[in-house]
Image 1 (cartoon, rainbow, N blue to C red):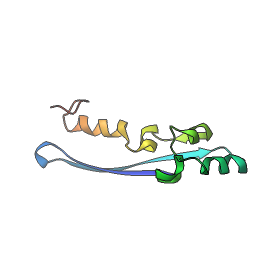
Image 2: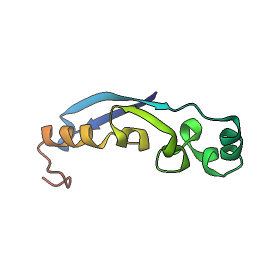
Image 3: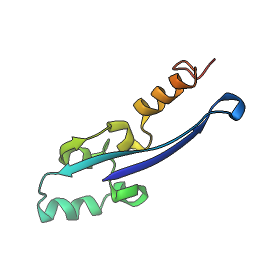
Length: 94
């Protein structure tokens, strides 16, 4: 499970929203040798959860529930919805 917390203060500091986004990532069953080979790469060592969905580990994803961009690090879709609530367009301009 990937859980990301976001809080935003709108222009002028008068609006506030706090939310979390949850995504669930399921991998197919891996062979022991696949796991050993993966650990020998540099990919898992600087990642939360020890995998990068855009890298080698992405090939093993059997199911994703929730927002893909949340797994990458920021729930973009929900963030843009909040920008719209604050009266900002998708480029962040008033």
